[in-house]
Image (cartoon, rainbow, N blue to C red; front, side):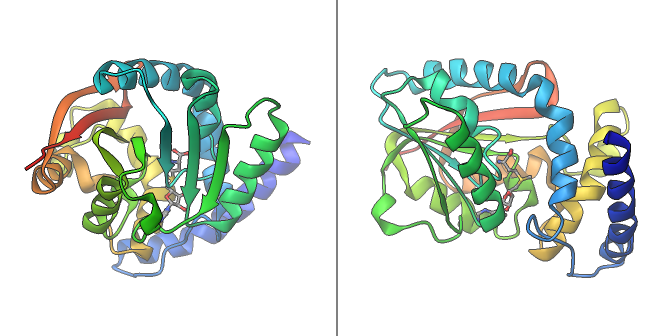
Length: 257
Ligand SMILES: C[S@@+](CC[C@H](N)C(=O)[O-])C[C@H]1O[C@@H](n2cnc3c(N)ncnc32)[C@H](O)[C@@H]1O
């Protein structure tokens, strides 16, 4: 059975290669989650073993940096099929409302199916939303906004960050997790994890980024630092989760006027 699905995957990967090749030649036609979810399925499988422990460490740090215990709402923005959000109710407790949103209808349907199967997760909900135009009714609603493995794949990061900040409470915490790679690909030569990240990048980040005029994994931490400064965010901590450069977390607060 496993062999049959592996064969199917190889066939689908073959189809994707011609699209990927065009991305490297400057094409704007990559693929989105809805078009090639099988890629994401593979990436999900590789991180499943460590994800729960990663989220456990992440939430300990979130609570520490938020600096208060009254937490009402947490947003997992661009949550995909909810792999991260799924672990949040047990970490935050049943009084905290967790919401995940993504532009992909397919991803949200999958997320809702898994939340439904997990009994006792009444405080976990999902909706289809564009991160570039989050609802006005969400203004300053969330104590924590999480962008997990999102920004480096996005085209209009300025607008994405603006929306994330808009829906964050003034004393809330913005959390951004991306791979720890430099914006200058030559700087990544001595980083063995960057070589592995490049494979994921070729299969997922670059074709996704091509759809939206983004950079894929090559966006890097220098660009992120600049963007956060531009949007008046103060980074209170930055660190690898579980010692993995794949999950480099930034914890930031709004600089209020
Ligand atoms: C690499 S996936 C990460 C998903 C999830 N955060 C996780 O770590 O499992 C990036 C996600 O961003 C979503 N996305 C891309 N552009 C978006 C937009 N404008 N609004 C909302 N979601 C978007 C994609 O559909 C995809 O699910």
